[in-house]
Length: 126
Image (cartoon, rainbow, N blue to C red; front, side):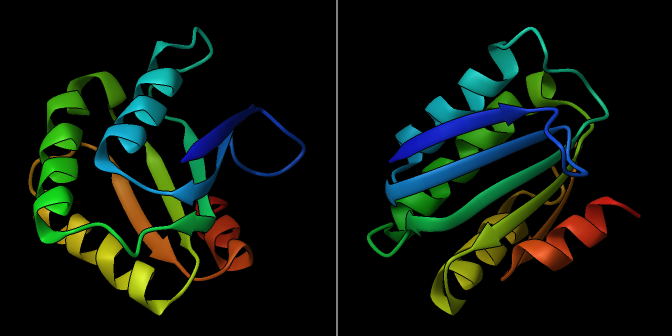
């Protein structure tokens, strides 16, 4: 999976992350590490993660659990954020909702899943 970080663009979000290609828990973790290690990263940001070109179809339940564990391990560095995730299709949307269910009690950020960028940005703008 490839990813790009776009900081403080013309849109509502402070950070937009765009992903493409086959997703693995390790590549998602690399994406998070790249974002939180950037000096522009701070607590209280609005973050749009656009997975509309990413392929989650090969993630097994074991890999979803690994992703959940990695997110929880990084929770302190991620901190309090407002994050919107845009997914490619209903199957990927369901997988992200499963991940949300696995981590909701342990993560300090507000996370919602969408199937389109427009409602995700509207939610971030509230």
